[in-house]
Length: 289
Ligand SMILES: Nc1ncnc2c1ncn2[C@@H]1O[C@H](COP(=O)(O)OP(=O)(O)OP(=O)(O)O)[C@@H](O)[C@H]1O
Ligand SMILES: [Mg+2]
Image (cartoon, rainbow, N blue to C red; front, side, top):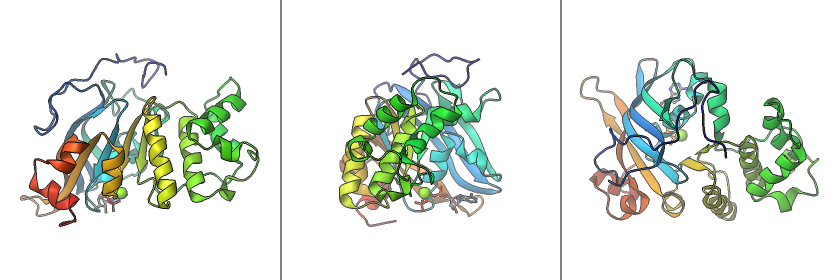
């Protein structure tokens, strides 16, 4: 993987990001961060969906975002690759540093941001094209000049689906099972050599066996990638992630409106066995949310 940059003109160093602004519950050891969020807030028009989020997302690890419905997990996830730009009413305040570069900086190309920071969605969403063309799509539009066959094979192998599809690369992606389609979408995400893969409830449409397959795959992918995953499945967060961020809805005293806030962010083991905030334990144990 080449050193991460957001634009060709601006080549930030890959040095660890500063850890200032981290919530006090976060592990104290210096973090090799890929993202540093400082006071991030996202509004849709006047409605504040999530606010006051400061956290360091570590490189080559899996970070899980958990919390009750509506607390802004997907909104925050979409901040990390500027997908919220596609929602006209969305406005992001605060700072999202990616390898020390503010991805909302004026000279940053959002298309390049999304190439480096890929996304896998809740429902598998392959294009109505062949398996091959799904994976080749990104490299083609990026003008990749090497062997597409090689990229397709490597990406499908990387997503642990090569053996199942290698003899039918010309078949429609829609003929695959849901779990296969989701792995194909992961292959499609990998094919453009991203640095980070964002996943929004990637297993919620899958059966337990396909879910475990994806979780195994996620663990393998952390050798090369950083993963941030939103999940409603507490067992999944506990099984697969290294770090967990728990969000909840809090009533704003000034406006009386509910907004999502980051309650606690720490090593997953600590969040699940010895969390600092009682709201975290209440949520994880199913007593709330
Ligand atoms: N495009 C949008 N326009 C306006 N409001 C939105 C938009 N997307 C999300 N919201 C609102 O922002 C808040 C946070 O939504 P978000 O989808 O981020 O929550 P979530 O934590 O991912 O919830 P869930 O667990 O149900 O997926 C909600 O109140 C939601 O209604
Ligand atoms: Mg969501």
